[in-house]
Image 1 (cartoon, protein in one colour):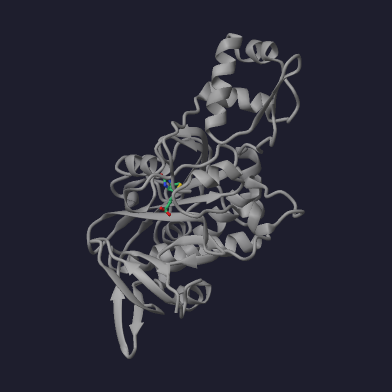
Image 2: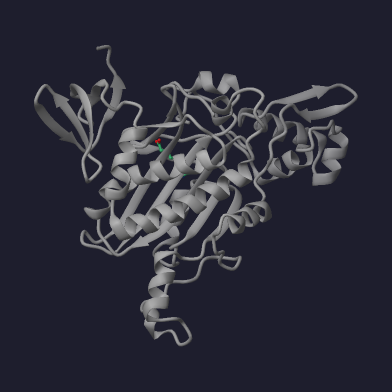
Amino acid sequence: MLCCGARTLVLTPLGFSLLRQLSDGAFHSGEDLAAKVGLTRARVSQLLRQAETAGLSLERVRGRGYRLVAAPDFLDGAAVRAALVEYGVTLAANGLSPLKTPNADDDIGLPGGEALAEIQAKPPIHLEIVDQIDSTSSELLRRAPRRDIHGAALAAEWQTAGRGRRGRTWNAVAGGSLTFSLGWRFEQGAGFLAGLSLAVGVGVIHALEKEGIHGVGLKWPNDLIHRHLKVGGILVELNGDALGPSTVVVGVGLNVRMPREMKRDIAQPVSDLTSVVGRGAPAIDRNRLLARLIAELAGTLATYARDGFAPFAAEWQHRHAYQGKPVKLLLPDGAAVLGKVAGVDASGALVLADGPRRARFLAGEISLRRA
Ligand code: BTN
């Protein structure tokens, strides 16, 4: 979600160990919690107040202690790995992703030729889940000069400096969102990769549908929306030479369960995937959803590396909630353009029609206009 008002959002590692104690949904006395994490009761109470600012709902009852009203299913590395294997993904060994080798062919024992090309096209996925980080995308970008981040998937329960498109802040609910990034290496440069973020949107929708979440659409360039309310966003960042190779970090943020008060606090209309599936549907399993997203996006990136945006273009338009609709496009310089959405071109640029005229745009925000 895009944020928001003046609240300070803080969750410390100690806060997380407390929340894990509480994740069974039962009451725990302040005394018990304090003893389990080795803190004073006053500190426990302070940390739990911080958890509330992070979107978690706590109940306090004199004589019984604290209880998480909606106990989050915290991300669990073992569960995500098991689901990744179930979804046909090859996993890399645990630990940090490998250091970069200046020339992989110099490494004795490493595969070469076709085997190497195969690994590069579909690298083993190196999964890492952390409680807290500034931003999963910033972290992969920081690692990229030293480490091989091709296939590195980093998910965080809580980002202290999550970033959205166009310099915006991206905040999430601890235990109620998915925030992760996937690193990838492409032989091609920025021109070839222009439509990549749109292709990722298609990949995310496929992943949601495979997990039984139907009804999410796209809003150019890559918002994920339901009934015109934003449920997630995609941020694709790349480094490299204009003609390639390029290192890409794909960041995805999804609202899975967001408290109503938090939705109200946000500057733009938002929703969550729990509302998409509707009341009465089984709770969304964030571990399986994360695995599905990583599996699907690995496939999307491999297809894009081979064939570019072309295989995604028709489906992207089909999934575009604004296709054929009259819109206002707000350009980055503040100017506004009116037109009907004709679609996207081969590079992912938005094509607006004004009568017989067509104009293409690379950046901006669209909003629906009354016909
Ligand atoms: C948008 O503005 O719509 C894009 C939001 C992208 C947010 C994700 S959350 C994981 C990754 N880390 C970040 O700091 N941002 C992206």
